[in-house]
Amino acid sequence: MTDAENEILTLEEVAVYLKAGKRTVYRLAQKGEIPAFKLGGTWRFCRSDLERWIAESTNKQKPGA
Image 1 (cartoon, rainbow, N blue to C red):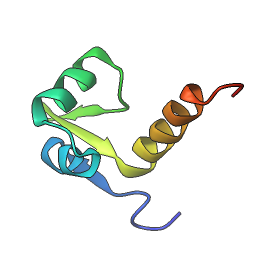
Image 2 (image 1 turned 90 degrees about the vertical axis):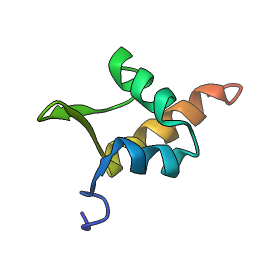
Image 3 (image 1 turned 180 degrees about the vertical axis):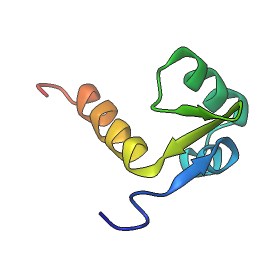
Image 4 (image 1 turned 135 degrees about the vertical axis):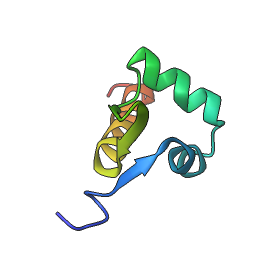
């Protein structure tokens, strides 16, 4: 894996990456709907986990997938 795949992102960085609001990302993390973990009380996200989650979410929406 490359360094970019292992990159750990903050909630703010994920919001920009997903083009979503910070509150939306926070809510998804709290509900366990997006891959995340807490570090010192703040949410963190692994870029490779997010990319996998996006791919899986996209595949679920395709008919016949």
